[in-house]
Length: 393
Ligand SMILES: Cc1cc2nc3c(=O)[nH]c(=O)nc-3n(C[C@H](O)[C@H](O)[C@H](O)COP(=O)(O)OP(=O)(O)OC[C@H]3O[C@@H](n4cnc5c(N)ncnc54)[C@H](O)[C@@H]3O)c2cc1C
Image (cartoon, rainbow, N blue to C red; front, side, top):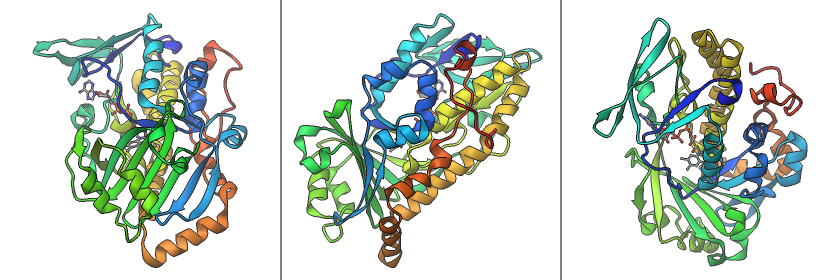
């Protein structure tokens, strides 16, 4: 987006090679609208899976609600709801980066620090043992949950939220038909919930199981033991098909879940943060990557408005994003509580879900999915973009 606005961009990535993360991701209309405006629509459409609905169930298998997605979401929000394998999304973004001569990607380059000058800044990087400094007019910390730049800006570290996410990806033909349905399925139980949906054209099923847990180790690649996971899905409350489904993957990865209360002032001078570095959130609204994508659109637009004053552009971007990202962080946390209720509270929740019905439940997310901004691509391709929406900026 920055390159489309006429900036030259250097991407500094610590990983020495870009490998496929073996997991799926949901992309809601607020994010797909931006990716499509960026020109990635056709490329991504080849790889995405379009879920027809979110089917909400109890741990015992009872149906609570069916929130329509598919055509209904696309009609309502003028943008689709997609599920995609993270590797496919990464590949599409990488191709776009490589096709643009104004973007340089430096792999194996770890950012360690920065220093501001009167007219720009220097970034201290390391490629293995070798120092490899970079210089520019602005610096955007998109370095994720454990952001070095966030701590360099003296913000607090993320806080553990007593939940662990377990992830697995399995061939669709290894599970019963119920688990292959073209839906996002959300199963709610006491102190645990389960989400699964097809990716890779329906040939793989992405599974995320979230449990209350005290295990707080940071990182993304801890192997999880199937028996340990199944202990959180007791036969007293979870039906046999769900437990049998959870027993299929031979390989689980688990990670502890963190977030951070909203930060008051994000950056300093021509430096800012975006995505999980700026507003890490719990995954219970499937919005972390979507917020990073929205950030990118707003940030590029802001820099394009005052290219000679990056510091002013950064503060404008931060002001534009604070309320919305705080609201999404809060809503994700609230879902985390509601999903894991037990006893009488769960009965009330289930009653509400049954009575509300799918369409009403979808309408409750209009504020989230119907968000629009004016990505800088609109400058290059007039008419390609959706209408701006008042309120967030
Ligand atoms: C279980 C689970 C399910 C989720 N499901 C969804 C979903 O369905 N939809 C959704 O929108 N979101 C989802 N999310 C959230 C989403 O994965 C994150 O919010 C998103 O990946 C954040 O993107 P990011 O670019 O800010 O950070 P990251 O994806 O963490 O990327 C940060 C990058 O910075 C690099 N880096 C870090 N430090 C340095 C350094 N010092 N120097 C150079 N490079 C560095 C890293 O190598 C990495 O490539 C989910 C999260 C979890 C845990």
